[in-house]
Amino acid sequence: MATYKQPCIHCGELIDGDNRFCPKCANRSPFGYQCPFCLKPVQRGNVMCSSCGRSLMTTCPLCKGQTFTGADKCDSCGISLMVLCTNKNCGQYQFFENTKCTACGKKIKNGIEQLKKRK
Image (cartoon, rainbow, N blue to C red; front, side):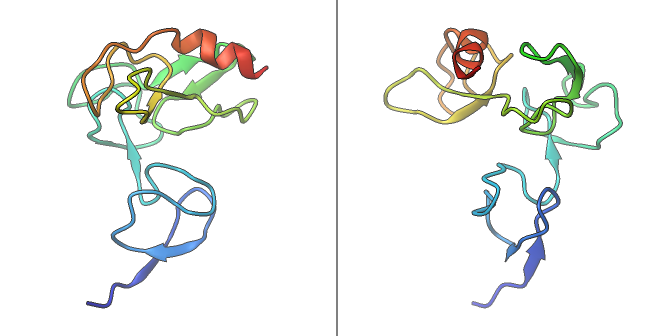
């Protein structure tokens, strides 16, 4: 079955419409933004998720700039805000403020410390 290619909203790369990740920029939501807590679609510019009510703005732990949580990278310094789930059987990338993995449900340990180690 043929699929039409669509541009990634983050880098512009044309990718298959059924892709879950962009192979060029590695973004986990190439066709729209998702709330990092409940994974529902959100719009850049919204201050809170209409589904779970969480704030869509946060402070980057490295540069202290305000950034949109629906994107994978800080708007100010460009560092990835994603950390690995510490469950060795999962290993999915999660937003650094998540306390539980959205893939496996296990507790995420040391999200902010994982980011600070990259510095």
